[in-house]
Image (cartoon, rainbow, N blue to C red; front, top):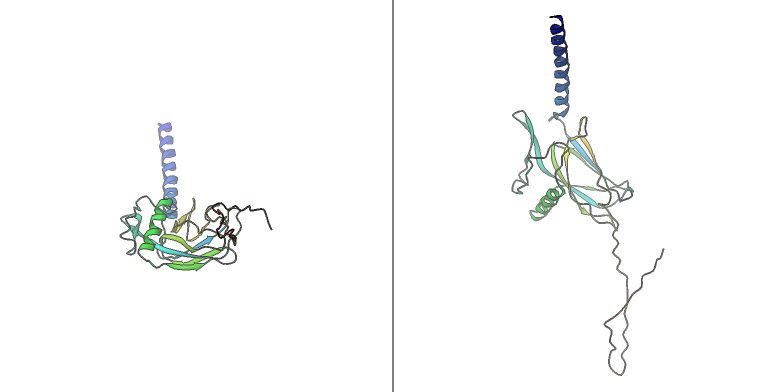
Length: 212
């Protein structure tokens, strides 16, 4: 009998400890809708070096809402007809790159207006005072000599594994801002007539060599 009572007391102790822990975990994941947040974007090259210059635009794709005990994202009026499926997106799960690309195309086609921010000398662009929701970030103008960053989605706030972060820092993956290797040399081709007829000039070869 004592063994049975001891086992019951031990079980009650475990339950009493587990319930507060579970409640604390749920509380940590519940966003504070009275707050606003920000997005700081570090634009870097493949080596992690800051890439200053260029302009980024942030579009509010969806608003975060709490309804019937659940947090969900609801498309804004601007993106209501985009057809985006947000059912699998939560704080910290920002969707597939294909969705970001499709939404960026939609924003251009619909001539939507977002919030712009220039990339500073330290490679950072900051968007402040943002309501809780899902945001699309697009680089409209790239830094000289670099290709634009690929469009991406980010939530405010963002779950970092232990807590919700309202001032989100986004680091585009290495290689998304890469040096543009295209080279357009200034060349003048001179053709001299011979006996009143231009020679066959269908083949014209350049040799590019290393230079400082």
